[in-house]
Length: 229
Ligand code: CA
Image 1 (cartoon, rainbow, N blue to C red):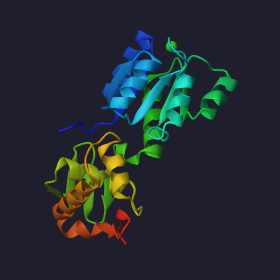
Image 2 (cartoon, helix red, strand yellow; image 1 turned 180 degrees about the horizontal axis):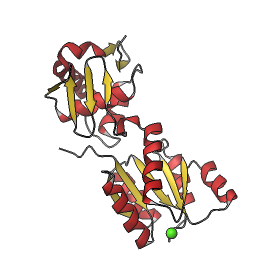
Image 3 (cartoon, rainbow, N blue to C red; image 1 turned 120 degrees about the horizontal axis):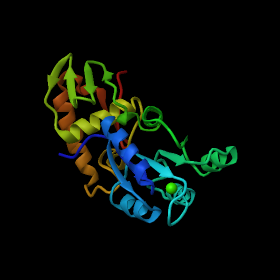
Image 4 (cartoon, rainbow, N blue to C red; image 1 turned 180 degrees about the vertical axis):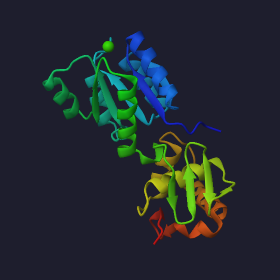
């Protein structure tokens, strides 16, 4: 079973900062991987899409800003949350970072608490399915910390794929998603499963939700949505 913790990629070449950041992220219950160059970061991105990137401005092979532009230009990563880490505190640098598509900006030195707060805020804004608060719809509630789903406050059995699917739906209520969007968002960009697999998991999810099954709507010839209405 794959980990359900948000995966955060740290691109930073200063060992002391890498150590501080990695420790802080683990304490906050996030999974993390650190690379030291832009090339290594790009290579890792081809294998696994993180939920968020912490990107240093000054890297040994190319600037973090160049990597950011490359990330933003790629269809798969254009919406990926990115926080720039930098020693620069000049206003124009900050603007350059944001102009190039950074979502936020942290100036070194920063406190672990500030780092965690900024990451949480950005995840809440850009990827609510990775926020760590309980989500509910009708009789169904999902607790991302304990990875449990309850129906009228009674815990229910649910498979891992169905859990992830439900979590995604709960984070984006009243929005219709196509099968291919669900594959991308729930199973990840690099998933090699067929679209009809989504139907199988939706079916299983409805079964698991019992009287809550009507929350998951089929929108004909479009896809699926979660709605209480
Ligand atoms: Ca650096």
